Length: 115
Image (cartoon, rainbow, N blue to C red; front, side):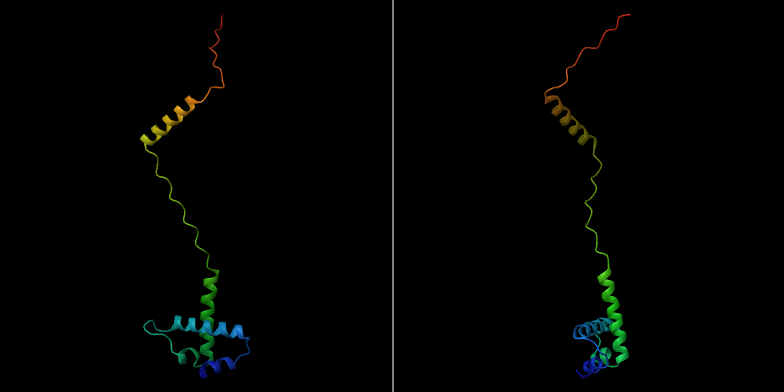
């Protein structure tokens, strides 16, 4: 606890900034520490300059995560190309539907032209 207090006493920060700086230092220390073991308190807060270096590294990581673009919603898959059978079936259904509608046009026989 004395290591943490010593780092806090070396700077003039408000409580929220101090809390966030300590959290950033912990994240930064985990970034720099060997992958096979977690960082020790002495590694994080042992020297004020290392504490500040860990805090800067952790802050940069946090800011990158905050400004990272959000993933786009997944696009629905494109429909597979229609087969001949599918086209024929739907064309027949559309033709039958059109044929069942009442006709609003009157069909006239073609004009005969006399010469």
